[in-house]
Length: 557
Image 1 (cartoon, rainbow, N blue to C red):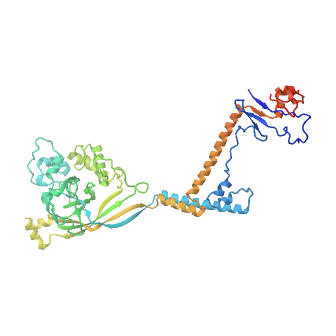
Image 2: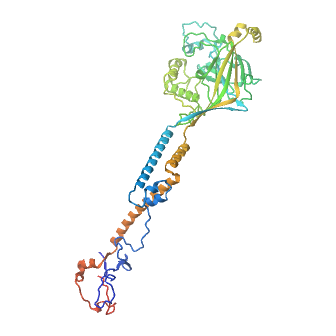
Image 3: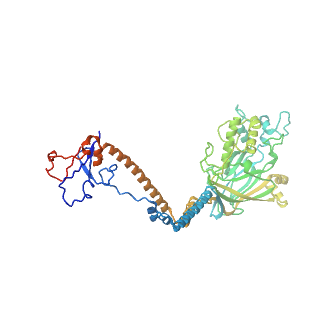
């Protein structure tokens, strides 16, 4: 149903004089706009759009023009380009060209800086710092000979034959020890290594640390690929870590060792366990990392005094994307602290357990030890393949914080002719034995300082933001607040557009529900009021609410 509201104005012959036709109500009539309930109305002036009029006062429309915005914006030069005057001028064109050129230069610099930042370059800083005292490193040493011949029995020789290159038809060539009492237990590789090892009590002739005497009790037993080895200042034997207060000789560890060459096994054949060298192998490392002496150790020969001057190096690497160090904790059942050696041992252990179903004596875990046959046929070849050829399996990232020890080695011959007889008498050995078996090892800090090698980001985010801000101020005179102004302007424009569209839809919906507002001409053209299209005379009594004589009357149909 459509409600039609119309206002009809009639003029009588008695219209007052002086009433202008231009100012007559016919020319400037008012239209009644009814509310939805049909009980209240309000007059609407001519010129108001009836389609959008909703009976309320018009909202003030915000000025969102570019000229107004850039006129108050802190972006330099824009107020000369975006002006109220739509007319083009040379001055405005020049300003526009300069403004666009400045923006282009600014964007070029920003792109260049962002590309440089995304390269993630770093620089390496070297520094040397003094210290009042320093923690002495852990020292691990192994005899090149893993098994003493005097402890080898015939059953040991048969069982370990594949590992030692010995075959049944060979003559041992050495006196054999009596059979050990195993009390019915099966042959154990760990028991064999423990029983036939070189003991520190037999090898250690003299030991001093910073002028104080030390003994075999200061050395902790540990298995490596060389068999049973010993670590000094391990930090795992309940003793506090040793501190050195001075640098130079006499302020570190001094050892005199007997390598016991007369206990070395004869070479029956070439295997991975066969040793052609005589002496000891030494590794200097931190207490947090296990020794990896077969690959990282250095050799010390008998008949020489070896001086090892150390300098502690503290290295700091960057994690990805700048570097490739490992910053996450180690995922291992055997080691709590991540290091390259711990990672390698853990990886090699898992590799052997997966491929050989056993582990070597020096490997952690609870898998069964490999038999000598498994050592020869599977474990040794697999480990050699892993170390020498398959570089893609055990890839261990460098830790982000690493301590290592730089070394400088020097040697002198011992014994001298003058001291040979004295040493032979002191240790109840021959001069030849002293020359072939005795070595002296002196390990000390060169000075009470350490070297720092640190990777630092060549270009950080703060530098990128600073460069962008500098280029922004140089080329377009803007700052971060200018960017906020631009975003605020975009927000206002989008909000106005969205609200305007929503209001239009709402007004159309209201106009469909509300009665149409029609002028007199609309009413005259409407079919139900045909009689209004021709002039008519109405008696005054048709409108009881109006006086009998008047200038005009209103009809609503």
